[in-house]
Each structure stands twice: as structure tokens, then as C-alpha cells.
Image (cartoon, rainbow, N blue to C red; front, side, top):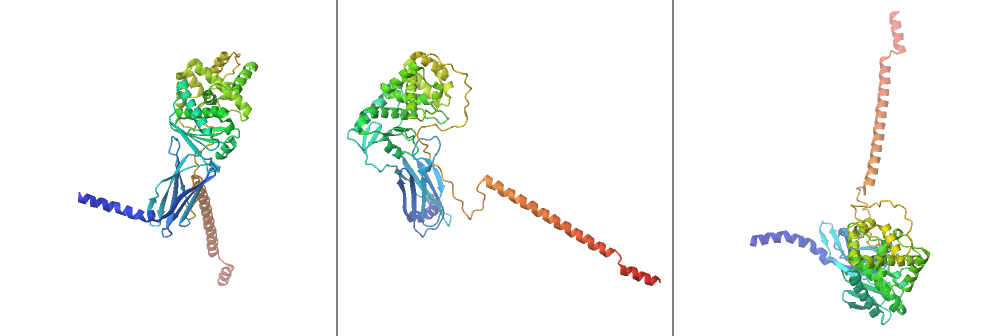
Length: 458
């Protein structure tokens, strides 16, 4: 046993000895957050350590089907290292998101060391936040005494309705941030639509809303239930095989979760029935209109379609429909599997239920789907997966950076080699011609030789 222990120490000690200089030489290792624009990762070492390579690896806490951490080579110019994640180019995660990072360092002796992993939570420091928690929902707000309790109560009521009337259950804890205006909320999230009053990030389990305190008890109550429905539906319908939900289903369920339809929703539906002006349901599979008025009408129509499905076929069918979509089926096949009709058949059945005449529906082409290649679920919020910055090329590294560079270098080499061969052949040909001429001159008799022969003969 002593021999085994001694052998282990002999193998283990060089590793410890190699890492000790790094571990004791880290002076500063931190991330400076300028939310939502960028994060600056900084590492300061004792000048006695000579680095040759440094790689920063950072990760964002969110749901992902694949490992999403990013590793970035950082140029070594001394004992102070820094790299900036420019979120204004890639889009930013919402506040409340945890970001972790560590450095991998290599010195001039070939020793390698990983700094301990550290984590920060992104915070919108423009405001002093208050916090309330009820069960699995945590709500943050900063303006208005009763805004937090009022909206948390509405969120809990909305969650209860989702569970009881639709059978859709919350999977993970939810964090909600309430801003006092939609403008303040949009300043916290880059590239969000300019008419958005709330955004649900189901991959982060986070909701952001802009709610002025004077309408928290009216518009705020319905909107928080709407966004919570988006988030819970996103959790239930998460897919790693390319599954996605049509927009009319996503938004229709969210409006249904608000409770009794508002006067605006009822008026939109009444106008659509009176004028027979509803859009084809198939056209609501994708993005809604960017104009707020047209978007509102699309929301109302989607609510009516979803209400028809829930009230006619029940919550179990709706749960099956969401599950089949998550398995990667397209909209038409999923509807056929669960309800027995495609999108066009759904439209005709829904129109009959509200007393509107059939719409002439032209033949639709067979939809094409990528069966084997997973795709990201399209979401209204900005894409937030960090973009890895391309590593800067080391001037001392003469190896090609890519296949394209390698091909170009090969082509140049072949052209140069061909020209060299041609030049060499031309030189050989010239030498051969000159040699032939010289030899011919030696073999031909000169005039003086003919004269000498004549004198001898005479």
C-alpha cells in the first residue's frame, strides 16, 4: 500500500507543481458588465509568469439541446488579458441570467492551468429592484407600491388557469421583471419589436414587461398572464428535433390564458364575422403583421381559433397537439394526427362554429421539412446565443487558416512551379542551340584551309 501511495504522489506532484505558479499568480479575474451592451472579461497575472497562450471559455445558463459554451483565443501581450463580449452585435440575454467563465492558460514551459469557474448574474443596475416570491414565481419591480403584489397575484391566477383549463404545467421556476414603461423594458433588450409591451424568454425562464403603475391592475394583469402562458408553453413544448408551434396556436393560447376576452378582442371578432374579413388561418402560421393594429386583429382571430379547439375537443387533445408538434411534425400532419383535419380543414370547421361562410381554399403544396437536421425554434425575442468571435491569427503561425486559404496557396505554388519548369526547359533549349552552332562551326572547313590546300597542290 505504501508503494502504491508513493507512486501516486510521484505522478501527482509534477501536476501540482506545474499549476502552483499560475494559481498563486492570479492578481485579478473578473467580468465587468455594462448591461445590455457588453461584458469585459479581465485577467491580471503576476509579471513573473510568461504566457504563450490564453483561451477564455464562457457560458450562459439557459435551456439548450447542445453544449453552448464559447471558447475564444485571447491575444497575449503581457500580464494583463482582456476580451469583450459585444452583446450589441449578438443580442443580449435578459436580466437575471447567470454567466459563468474560466481561463485556460499556457506558459512558455508548456504548463497549462484552468482558473476556477466564476459566475455573475446580469442585472439592470439602472433601477433599485424590489422582490416577491410565490411558489415557483419570483417577481421583481421598482415603481409603485402595489405593482408587485398585484401582478404576482395575477401571475399565480394565470398559472392556475393554465393547469386546470388547458392541462399545461409549469416545468421550471419563473423570474419576472416589471419595468414602469415599455420604453424602459425595450432599453434592457436589444432588437425587440418597438410595439412590444412584454417579452417571454422560455429558454431562460424569464419574462420582461413594461407596465406603468396606473394600469397595473388592468392591462398589467392580462399581459402578465399572456406572457406567462408563452413561457409555460415554451417549457412544455421544448424540442430538440426541430419541433415548432404555429403562431396562431402560440398567441391564441396566450390570449386565452388572459381570462375573459377584452372588449377589443370581442370587437375584432365581431367585425370579422360581420365583414367576413378574417385572414386565412394558414397565413397565421408564421409571423404576425408588424403594425400594432393589424397584429392585434391577428391575436384576436388566433384566440377565437384556439377557443374553438379547446371548447369543442377539450384539453387532452390540445396537450396531444402540442406534444406531436414538439416531436417534429409539421402543422398539417399534427392536426391530422390529433383532430382529423389539416390547417384548411380547421379553418372551415372554425368558420362554421362562428357562423361565417366557407372560404374558397386553393390547393396547397405538400410542405417540405428537414427531417434529420434539428433547427432552432423561431421566437419573437432576439436571438441570445453568444456569437463566438473569430480568433485572431498569430503572425508567427504560417499554417493556412482555412480550406479556402489552403487551396489558394496550393494554386499559387503549382503556378510558380510550372513557370519555373518552363523557364528551365527554355534555358536547356537555348544551351542546346548554342552548342549545336558551336559544333557546326568547328566541323566546317575555313577559307584559309582551302587556300593552304591550293598552294600545296600547285
